[in-house]
Amino acid sequence: MAYIRKTIDEKEIERQQAVCARIFERVTADGARPLAMVDTYGCQQNEADSEKLRGYLAEMGYGFTQDEFQADVIVVNTCAVREHAEMRVLGNVGALTHSKKARPGQIIAVCGCMVQQEHMAQKIKMSYPVVDLVFGPHELWRFPELLEQVMEKHRRVFAAEKNDGAVAEGIPVRRDGKVKAWLSIMYGCNNFCTYCIVPYVRGRERSRLPEDVVAEARELVAAGYKDITLLGQNVNSYGKDLEENVDFADLIRMINAIPGDFLIRFMTSHPRDATEKLFRTMAECEKCAHHIHLPVQSGSDRILKQMNRHYDRAKYLSEIETARRYMPDIVITTDIIVGFPGETEEDFADTLSLCEEVRYDAMFTFIYSKRVGTPAATMPDPYTREDKQKHFDALTELANRISGEKHKEYEGKTVRVLIDGETGKEEYNLSSRTNGGRLVHLRGDKGLIGQFAEVKITASNTWALYGELA
Ligand code: 5AD
Ligand code: SF4
Image (cartoon, rainbow, N blue to C red):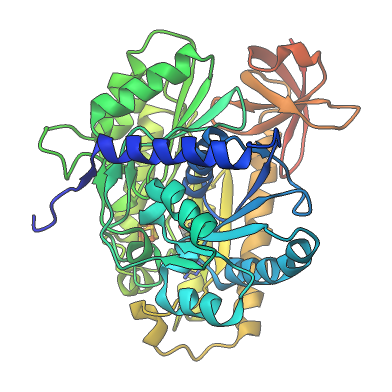
C-alpha cells in the first residue's frame, strides 16, 4: 500500500495541552469564568470530534453555553455531505455578526468537513469576516495552538491544507452524557462512492491501534457508560492499514471480553465487505447489539455501479439473509439516495421493491445533492427536482409504513431496554432503547437512567414504541 499510516507524536499532544494551560492563565486571569459554545452539524463522527474540542476547551478553563451572546469562543463544527447542511451553516455563521457586535473580542471558529473544501474556505475568507479561525478535520488535534495564534496575533488564521490525515491519541474528551458514548475506531474513507465528498475531506482510511481502542472502551465501562458506539466511515475496513492481523470482528470480540454489563454498537458498515464472520461474531458476542446499519443507497444494479458501490442487489440481499440467519431478531436500518444523476423510473422501482423485500426497521432517505469535485457532479442529470421530490415522498411513505408495521409487532412483548434520558413529557417521561436501538418511551423514576430494565410494550407508532416497566 502506498499510503503510510501517520501518527501524531504524543509529545505534540502534550505541547497542545501546554498551550491549553497558557490559554487558561490568559482567559481566567481576572477571576473570570469564560464560556464557549460548540455547535455541531452532521454525523456521529462530528459529534465525537466536538467532544474533543470541548475536552480541549475545558482544559483551557472554559465552561459551556448554548447561547451565542454569552460565549467568548464559538466553534462551529460543520458537515459537507449535502448542500442543505452547508446552507444552514453559512446562514448561522453569518448571523453571528450580532453576537460579535454585542460581545467585542468574541472569537469565532469554523471547522470540520465543509471548510476542508477549498472553495468553502475561500468563501469564508472573502465573505464572512466575522470568522477568526478556520481549520479542517486534520487540524483538530492542534486546535489549541491555532486558537492561541488568533488570541496573540489578533489576526485571522486559516488551516485547512490538503491532507491524507493522521491518527492522534491522547486528546482530552468531554462527553455529553453519562450513559452513551461515541468511540472512534478509525478515520477517513477510501471508498470514493461517486456522489460522496467524505473521502476528499476526511482523508485516507486509518485505524487506531486495537490496544488504544480497547483501553478507551475499558475507561468508558469503568466510568459507567452502558452503551458504546464504535465509529468509522466504514468500520468493516478496520485494521486493513495496520501491521497487525486484526479485523473489525476481532475488535468486537476484544471489547466484548471487557467485564461489565454494557452494549456494543457500531456504525457504519459498507455492504461491499460486511462478512459472514462479522455476523457470526455479532451473534456470538453477548454484548454486541443486534443492529446493523447497512446503507444500500439504491436497489438498482445500474445505479449501484454508477455509484461505485462494489456490490449488487443480489449480494446485498444475501448479506441481509446471512445476518438474519445468525440473528433472527436483528434490527436493520439503511441510507438511501433518491435522484442520483440519471436515475430512472425503473431504477427507482428497484429501490422500492428492495425496501419491500428487506423490510427495514428504519430508513434514512436523502435527495441526491451535487458535491463539487466528485465524479457524480459531472454525470448527466436530466431529471427535475420535482421528479426527485415525488420519488422521495413515495419512498418516505413506504419507509414510514414499514417502520410502523414493524413497531406494531413489538406490542404485547416484553423487551430489555437501556434507559438513557428524560423526554421532558409528562405522560412518558423517560426514553430508552431496545437492544436493536429502537426508541421506547416509558414512565418511571429518573433515578433509573443508566439502568437496563424489562419493559412491556403497550403501544407504538412509526417513530417509537411506548411501554411500562415490567
Ligand atoms: N447526496 C445525498 N446524500 C448523500 N449521502 C452521502 N453523500 C450524499 C450526497 N451527495 C448520504 C448517503 C450516506 C449518508 C451518510 O449520506 O446515503 O450513507
Ligand atoms: Fe461516502 Fe461511500 Fe465513504 Fe460512506 S463509504 S463515507 S458514502 S465514500
